[in-house]
Image 1: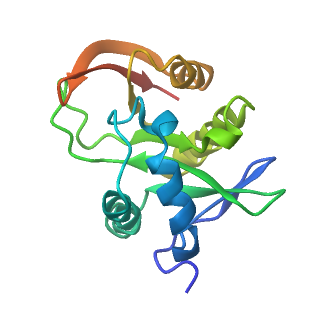
Image 2 (image 1 turned 60 degrees about the horizontal axis):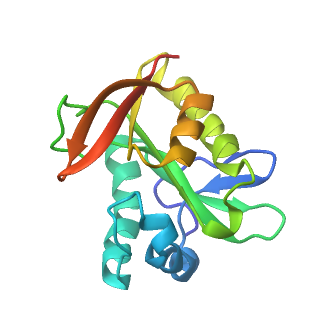
Image 3 (image 1 turned 60 degrees about the vertical axis):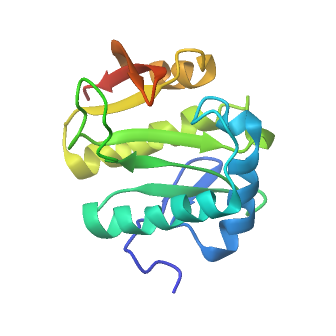
Length: 177
């Protein structure tokens, strides 16, 4: 079964956004073990076991919430190059964002700097508007992660407040379509 959880397949000019597959797992592990990827997302590389738990979470999000994260497949090569989508992780953060679709993205360093994140996040947000209607979405980003802050700003997010999550400083941003 390629899509057991009803994950829609959507496309951008350079990517296919689809359900995560078991065949993606080794590339997924490599991405989350890379300190460049995790520098601003938890601060430390993930183990294979930690990556497996994250990987499994994606199927659960789609099954329970009707939304989640897509695997990003590069059209030109067929390679897994990252993930993006929405989640509700019931974060212990103030102000509370529980129940609000939270956008997130992570891309392999091999595709950094090519505008791919902006392309993908823009498409994810379009899907969100089509699916959720004109509702607010949020994202949280480390204030030192200028690349992701730039992506968020280009995609219409605006800073709401500086806060912290797990004792790390964060910027909470929201987008009103």
